[in-house]
Length: 188
Image (cartoon, rainbow, N blue to C red):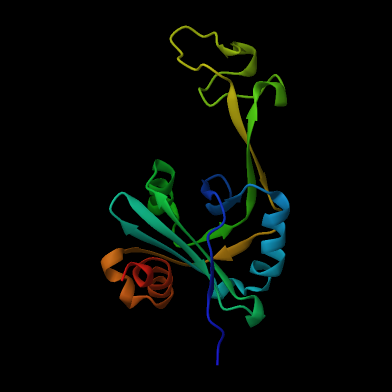
């Protein structure tokens, strides 16, 4: 008898990276230790060919679903998050070519005092272009903010990637299980 799937959604979201041999899918965590612990306790034990990533589209949002059968069933945790559609998601969908690297990362926001002079603000201008607010004519940025992404070195190669619409989840067991447990079951 296999253990029930434990669903985990306590992460910030998903980033996509395009400049490696394969595109990257990167669940983001606010704490690097949490990301590392989850990787080592769960994902590390997943055989690459068994990892599944599903994107279930529902209106202007999508469900990100990450799962596998673990060789350690007592640690069989799967991940999900309901996210807004984004240009990065659509770019990944169009260009992934059936495979991607899976990596975990920590994400943290940084202010002007926390970064080096070459850092770039979310407005697109560098730290030296700011004195509290952006000094570039026409820029409406009122405060320097940027972010730091620290990716774990470990990665897995995922080749079982599917894009589904919500009406089709009954034909995919992992998507159906996720949506049933995390959406339908509680709304009845």
